[in-house]
Amino acid sequence: MRKRYVVLIVLLVVLLSLTYLLLFHHEKEEVQEQESEEKEEVKILTFKKNKKWRPDGIITKGEYKYGVKLQSFELYWFIEGEYIYFGIKGHTYGWVAIGFNPSDKMKDADIVFAWIKAGIVGIDDQYSTGETGPHTSDTELGGTFDIEDYGGQEAEGWTTIEFKRKLNTGDSYDYAIVPGEEVKVMWAIGLSDSSYMKHIKMGIITIKIKE
Image (cartoon, rainbow, N blue to C red; front, side):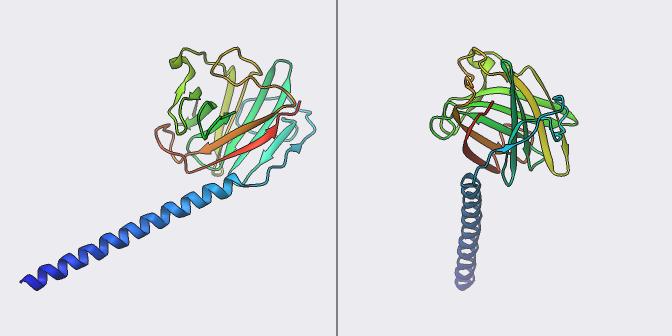
């Protein structure tokens, strides 16, 4: 009887050890994948802008002047007057987000967080108060919601969001974008539409916001 208990305990220890190793290996792979995304070479693409901007979630040729294409994320923009227009695409049917000028990891980032649920686009103007969050709505911190127009759609495994905002909104929780200056841009995508679910991929790039 005692031998049977010993065998059961040994088997339990082995199973727990295998489970730990599998989980550790998965986490290690995920971290390596995220690091590889962060180290992607950044090349700013230039396009001939000859079409009117429409926040319909379809980024068409000629709609934007500049762009950056990464493996799982794409960013497009152009400046017109006091406004900057963005198009972002994430390889997911969950949430997509970009953050401007983080000081340390996520801390102090001016974040635009967006999702599409049942065909309805949701978007939030946020600010990250810590290295790993939380990223809270500007309005909850005493700031303002400064995304003036937006739209999006999900298609072929990608979520596309288009929006516009002022270069300088006057809100202390928004980063004042200066044309021609370099800015650190953080991007991330999630599997679900909930902001409480952690990203599955992310990266930080430095680009010059050309006019």
